[in-house]
Image (cartoon, rainbow, N blue to C red; front, side, top):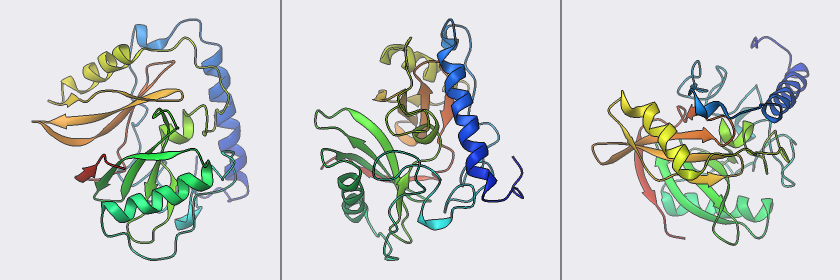
Length: 238
């Protein structure tokens, strides 16, 4: 997709592509993970997706990216923030909790991670199961759905909302896919956390978190979260 395409056309093209991807997933006769692993992150820069910066995707700027409104459908962004920098994990959790409450009053915030480029949080349902992943801009307080799998693979709040994810990898199978993916890089992975349509795992080097990747629960595709920058700290307490 060329960056010069107008903002009017971009959402239309993106939506068509997403619907096409969803149709492709539903017509697969056997899961791709049985034979191969592909890296969905290839060609994406460290600051975002499709050549767009960490402040947003597809020209939508710092108030959010084309994605998810309060009702979980594609409505154009996350919270607007108030321009106040987020200085630590506790403040990032406060921002994430406000966003979670607006998205669904039953949601809660799980782990919060600080990276060089922003804060990351996962949102959980009342039973503690993962439902989606979000980012908190450390400079402005803006909260938005995370790039990549949370947008493209999530079957509850993503662009393939409502898609049938069967046949689905088990957590152990997703772990095996991830381990094969990072083995040559001298990394290991943490335990898979399941989200609707995919799993997310920490990547670890010499016992320390280095980053994250996700494994598609239908195809076994691997998507590295290449937009975070260096890991700084994390908190798992609510």
